[in-house]
Image (cartoon, rainbow, N blue to C red; front, side, top):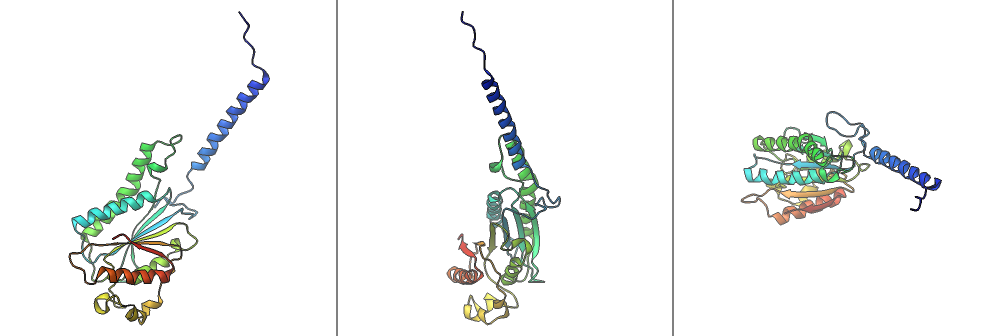
Amino acid sequence: MPRAREKGPWFWRSAIGVMLLSVVGLFSVAAFNAAPALDPENECRMDRRDPAHTILLIDQSDPFSENDLAWVDELIDAEARALPRFGRLTVVLPNSAQPFDPKTLYVHCSPGSVEDANPILQNPRMIDDTWREHFYQPLSETVGETLKTTSQPSSPLFEALYAVGDRADFQSNRSNRRLVIVSDLMQHSDAFSFYRSGADLAAYSETSVSGQVPVFDGVDVVARIVPRQEYDLPISELKAFWRNYFEKTGATFGSTN
């Protein structure tokens, strides 16, 4: 019977090298996936290096119906899932009492959805549970309860948009900025009202708020128009006005309906 050939030094050196590379690789992956220091209040990065920021501007004059709440919840779900790990989501409401000081209803950063989970180092089910319990459910419940119960006499959209553009966490030095407007798009405040003047660009240009246009260079703006049984102005006129408005801000504007 032939004698088994002994493995030479080259074999053991190669094996040790592979083992060392594997260990270094695992440590590198773990270091790459390690969480940075987070703000305990909203789980956002303390260094403010948000990989993305989505602001939902939800405008309502009257409480939303159950049908409206259902599609708003689907919209929120889609926007929340689209955020990368540590991406910031902010919900803002126009404020009739103080038009240039909209109400911030919710601010939180995503812990990462199951789609972003690393199957080697993370448990996808635990990631999904954390995402739902710490991020999505508080968001959905807070927005849903507010939209069912809140009403206000005016819709100062121009003023709210100007304030959004002035936010420190929504400046051009931030990555992947997105603004989603949920509204019937009927601007109505003391400064300018579509109910009084229509979606008239000439009339708007003569007002003081026409000089208070936010800077949204690089911002992706989407409008989800709240369905009504009867609209006060043709939808085409509203879209044309807002498209012109957002062109002046430097944003990319689109409407989902």
